Structures are given as C-alpha cells and as structure tokens.
Image (cartoon, rainbow, N blue to C red):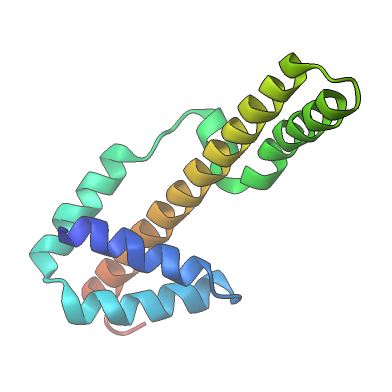
Length: 134
C-alpha cells in the first residue's frame, strides 16, 4: 500500500470521529507530518487535485451523500414491502438495485470526503511551511 492509499485510509478513520473539521485536520496534520516527506506530500497533493471531480453531481454527493442516497433507500424499502406483501419477485429486484445504488452513492461520497480532507490538510501544511509566523 502506497502513501496515497495510506493517507486516504487515515482520513477515513478521522471521518469516523465526531469532531469539527478543524480538529480532524489538526490530528491528520500531525500524522502526515510524521510519516510523509515534503516531496511526497507535494506529489500526493498534485494527484488529489487532478483526481477531485469538479462536476456538480460529484460535489453534491461529497457534501450530501446521505440526502442523495435517501430516495434510493426508499426505493429499496418500498420494493421489499411490495415484493413481500404482493408476492411480486420484480419488486424484490427493485430492492436489490435500490439498496446497491444507495450503498455505492454513500461509499463514493465517503471517499470523496476523505480525499477532500487530505487535500485541505496538505494545503494547510504547505501554508504553514510558507508562513510560519501565523
């Protein structure tokens, strides 16, 4: 596993903690400062900037992944309810598809949010190196 994947996993771990973004960045900044060289930090930052999507739908998924996935969970639940009560196998297919899509939307949003956290942390580290007075 490379440094890039390790940083994303560290960010995902920080996302599980209930704290502010500033606190998450501060904790991640310490971890990155100890384990990743400055040259690797710049390389990872460039990779992240190139990878981050700029379209509106991806930004929506990143910021509101649960809101986007909620209708899909509703389709899955309704398909399950109708499939069981009306004995319709087609409705059970809607359950599987809706549940799968909802899970993938939430997974994609989680990954985008972790990448954004790493990117913000690397930008803050770079800023502190350039302006140590602040």
